[in-house]
Length: 322
Image 1 (spheres, one colour):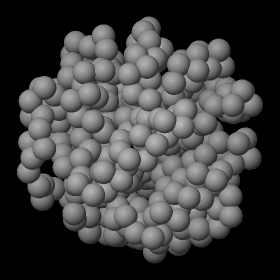
Image 2 (cartoon, rainbow, N blue to C red):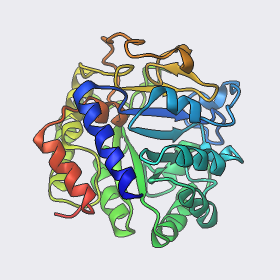
Image 3 (cartoon, rainbow, N blue to C red):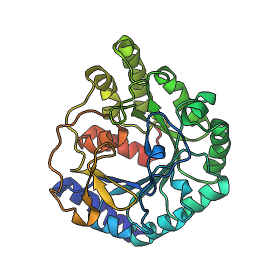
């Protein structure tokens, strides 16, 4: 990134702090998926049309960052060109990709990285065959743990996205440490099953004390430096979410939103489409009283810009060290 792009990016960020706008958009480049997760129904739906290019979407919405999601994005044969087109048109734009990793190779991952990604994330909830069974993809975990160190060694900024749920929450600190051992960052997002009605993975009252202890351990890991990227603000509210079955203050639609593969905009992934991206304007979405999730994307957008947050950002910019 050139000095002029960095300066433009700084101005864009401070303008966001001063007058608002979209912090992030989750851009679904496809709803097709080769996994069979029981907490998602995308793979059961008839996928909508996929736009060839999303430059006009980003020009209209003007976010600080874009997360390319699915479905499974790597099912798009033109994904590298989708990424390259966004990078050509937006010098200062944090561009990330979330994949289940099953189709990821060293060569393919490097091509996507070199086309302009700033971060690549792989979903990983367990360090063993339980992850394979939950995603319906035999051999998935072994494949991830083979390709991830190869990509890191080649210079890719890689992160494991971990969904915190009843079956795995006690093991998450160990999984974060395992990621660190192979040079991979880690982030945590709380399970939520209200959209499809699957509460099987929800943490119940009987486990709340243990959850508080795990959250405390993760907060200590975060504050002591290392590879955990999830903010302290988010981690502190995880026990509250599972205890109260909600966290108030959601800013979905106001400073972050979801875009479907065919260019429709949604308040968030769990709400219905509200219009075409070309219709968006400041104030398109009014405030929401929904509090039924505590996804990490929501937490990052909702977190106040405090001295602590700027400090955490500074540590990450310096490499995540102490």
